[in-house]
Length: 246
Image (tube, rainbow, N blue to C red; front, side, top):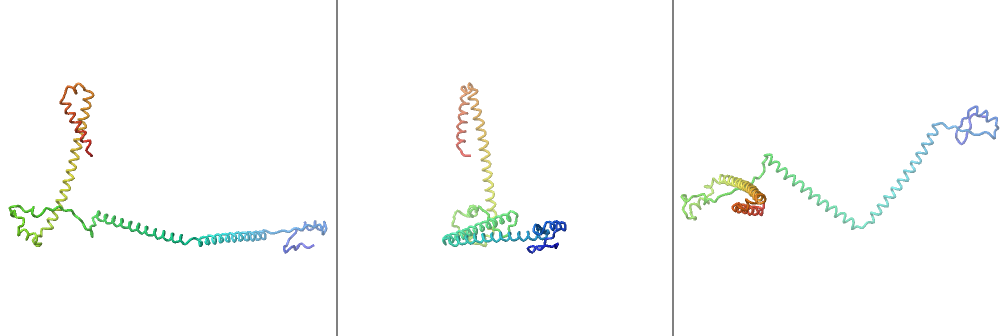
């Protein structure tokens, strides 16, 4: 019997011991043994795997394509009014975004301008000064002019721009005058607050003393009318100051 048996296009090789034992059993009772090598099994397994993966990928692509087509058909049936509303909303959003950007750059420009001014870079800046002027008529004494306000000489002096060369100097004096008056106003307010605070503190202290005397030293309170009058004045002054907003 041949060592090689052809079966369905595959080659099976049987060991010699098997062949000898099978020959003894007879031609009709001999079982068929087929041996596959590892390389053939690997190739078959790889082909099956590729086939199943390809089938799954193709089916998945078909499902996704069908879903995309359904979504596209749904959007194509949407009312045109919705499209117009979306367009108007987009244009409105762009308008507000533009305003926000403009406001941002405006604030940024103002901040840069302030920083340049604070750092001493005052090129291109228009500095404004507040000045406090006194009319020219008040500067001239009665010895320099008579009581007639319609003095033609003074009118000529006021109208003659060439004779008014000290205008710049007087402007500087007016600016200084305004600064001095502003500082004086601040000093007056500070002094006023200092005096008011000290006076309030004094009144509160005297009132507390009067209350203590009235409650704890009753005999002295009854017999001393001047103390009563003074304490009543303290109470009245305290009530008056309490009614004044701080």
